Amino acid sequence: MAHHLQVAIENWPMAGSFAISRGAKTEAVVVIVTISDGDKIGRGECVPYNRYGETVEGVVSDIRAMEGQIADAITHEALGALLPAGAARNALNCALIDLEAKKSGRRAAEMLGLPPLFPVDTAYTLSLGTPESMGDAARLSSHRSILKLKLGGDGDPQRIEAVRAGAPDARLIVDANEAWSASNFAANMSACIAAGVELIEQPLPVGADDLLATIDRPIPICADENVHVSADLDDLTDRYDAVNIKLDKAGGLTEALSMLRAAEAKQLKIMVGCMVGTSLAMAPALLLAQRADFVDLDGPLLLVGDREPGLRYEGSTVYPPSPELWG
Image (cartoon, rainbow, N blue to C red; front, side, top):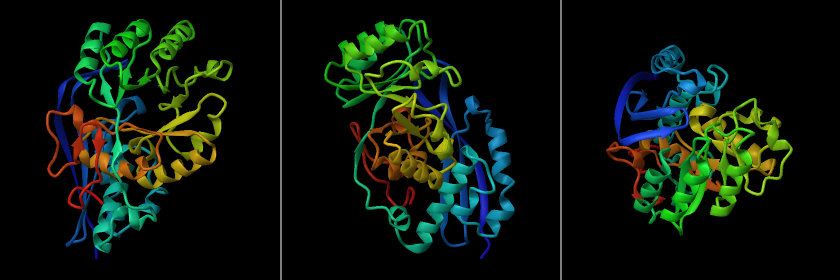
């Protein structure tokens, strides 16, 4: 039976502005893929990211270009040979897995040979701001078990100190989004050590991170912007101790699971991350989160509202998706 493809763009307002070192935004723009066989429906969501040369219009065009293959009932495994890794392939891949699970009457985890899912604790992200504003945000979020700080380079020791003062009992991880440099690295690392930070995500720019191979790394350094798929892992281990796996970078759950296994074989710590999207984007990533050292799937918590049905969040604990949502 031929499959039918639909694509839609959705805008989800954010609860305030979300700022990182590259800029700020007030809404999440997501692309939704729906694939139907006339009876069952599978869905996937992606977030096009300008940092990787993606636009919403370009991603939608790439998805629609696959209409013929989707009509011919292409499998999620075969999709990887036809589209490069990225947001477009992610939405299609997750929609195909969702459809296959619903057609089989099994949950996606079982269908992919994985054990049943259990709840996990996610980090909650604090947007980049002044030390004062980030300290205030930390106090408001001090009940959460794990906080992730967006940093900006210069002035980060003061930001880190303010957050630690505001949330003295929370576990902390930091994400510089490539904003640190050789000149401020030592001071920023010292501040992280003093605050008990457990992970530092992508401190230096892609292509300018050789420093990491020459210094002690008392806190694990996590690769994000410079690692997308399994093949990228081969050039990491002299500089990084962990890897952030995101479905939108990997091009879907199929490659992300391969990447997880490859990273484990290299004894890298695993972080499962996300772009800012709805529960539909987070749900497939929960299959990865079962084996992750750090989980950062707080996208829906940063929005004014989430889709229904969405994931169940209780504080920092996120529960497996219902079949109605995904998988």
